Amino acid sequence: MTRRIAVIMAAHGEAETEGFLDNYSMTRRTLDHAAEVLPIPKPLRVFVSLLSGLKNSRSFRDAGYVSPHNPITRRQAEAVRRSLSGRTIPEDPVYEVFPAFSATPPSVEEVVERTRGFDARILLSLSPVESHLTFGSFCDHLESVCTEEELAGSRVLSGFWRADDLREIYREHVFHHVPPDTAPGRPVLVLAFHGTLEADRKGDVPPFSTGLEETRSFASILGEAIAGDARNPFGEVVTAYLNHDVGGRWTQPPLESVLERLKTDGAGHAVLFPAGYFAEGNETLLRAKGLLEKSGIPRTTYIPCLNDSEAFCSFLAERAAAAARQILLPKEGGTGASVHGGGEAAQDA
Image (cartoon, rainbow, N blue to C red):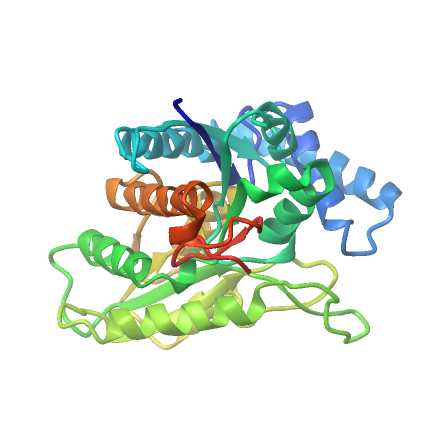
């Protein structure tokens, strides 16, 4: 009998139009998720969402901008489906790949419900680094709605930053996009990551996993891998964070400060790569790229996210296939009794 395997590509999600309702809903759902672990009163969530919806709809309309984030996720899902087609475990399973989002339709919760009849479910958390607001919340949801039998057939995969082959994909991606006329030793490479809260307004460490140490480790390892490559044209590789201005103290240094420092130091060429994101969106295109272009540095280069590149989507497909083997062939791949999985392969937590 042919076995059906659902692969759920779980991304953050962004409004797909410049309309107020879409942008209000995206912000409101994002804040509601955050309120599960942070004390954000409901009236404040509504107020911030209204302001964000109005601001985004006006600025997006004026700029003729619509976020490409969700369409990119759908292209990633299709590329993963193609890569999985024909893989055996050992007989031929049928892989169905579903894009899903935390902040926009179709929601992760909705897609999890739609796939309850599958023989196996693999949920790929589309963030390089795991945190409670991504990986943790997906695990919590599965554990709250699934039977023990369903949990035995489920995996949530995250922590991809630990995978050597992903770092190699990143490195090749960066060198491929460096302008061919780049003078060795001259440009500065800025690796930008999603910032996170280090301490609240009282100075207390957040009582949940923020992915802070994992992000720092990823930044260090990736920076060293690029700097140590024989093709390296960069005189300096630095880390920067895209932070928010609410809740307390965020990761340092922020991208704004890094770019200002480079300008003051007389950097002639800055290359920015948003390494903390798997797909383009508002934070990478409007904020990071916008800050780079307005930095006053004489020459700037923006390297796009991995998006739906063949190498990256093949990497995701291999992780999904490894998790499927673990579930359907437990004697070879593990006990098959946990929703948790890792970036190197699907492994029991």
